[in-house]
Length: 148
Image 1 (tube, rainbow, N blue to C red):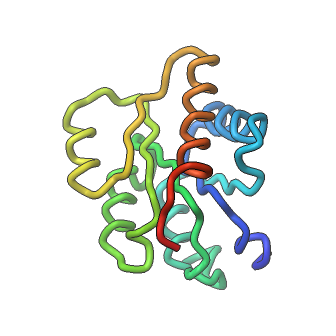
Image 2: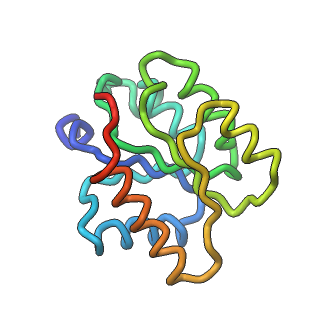
């Protein structure tokens, strides 16, 4: 399992299985990413990133190229996850893109205050959602240069 964790390119933190499956299919269909880890809520995400609970034996120095983060999740919401990721020197340089259905200005403003790298409102239609995910993947995995 440790070797598989080392090769992860994208961490998807999403409580909706339907949305998660769509994101994963779109990235793979467009040959943008083969190594995606889906975490189902904010609590699991924080355990993963900080090597706690089920992920206690994970090397936290192994970082993905991108985190796709939903806002509205059970247990711990996306803003809290973002806050903790950007407050810790070990994780603050990992690009985080919020993918949410929230069009609330306060969510957008708070996300940027906390250091988010991008904020995308999930399109309603299947085709537009799949295209938005593919465009995100293309930019963050192929075009953008980030510190390693």
